[in-house]
Image (tube, rainbow, N blue to C red):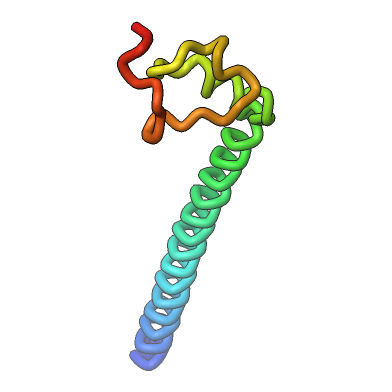
Length: 96
């Protein structure tokens, strides 16, 4: 006959092995989730950096041209090369 203590020892070994495997699976799931979160964060940061780097560089000439093309109370050729503030313009209503 077999010893009943051997069954108890085998059951205890199986229970311990199951607990260890359960903890290992939980640790693997947590590290995978943490790694995925970190990867999404770095992926988003990379996308933002690439989008920012792909924007055209704004120069002083671009700013001046944009200001001159903006509709105003002054015609663009009369204010070329000067700062024109449409809020404090003395020529309002003189041009169409």
